[in-house]
Length: 66
Image (tube, rainbow, N blue to C red):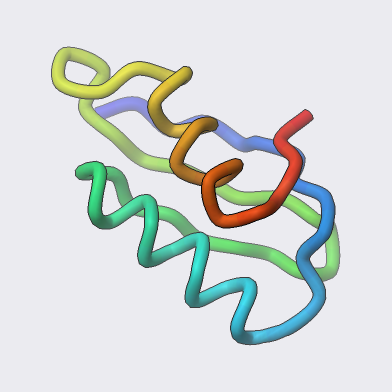
C-alpha cells in the first residue's frame, strides 16, 4: 500500500469531507481529509489504482487537486 498527500482546494465543511472520502472509497482507496490544511491523505494499492484515477475521483466531486 502506498500513501500520498494531495492538496485539494474548495473544501470547507463536513459535506466536502464525506464527498471526497466516499468517492475515494468507491474507486478502492482510503482517504482522510484535513480541512485545516486543505489536504487529503490517500492510501491505495498502486498495483490496482493510479494517481490519475484518484485525482479524477476527487475532481469529479467538484474540487481542484493541486
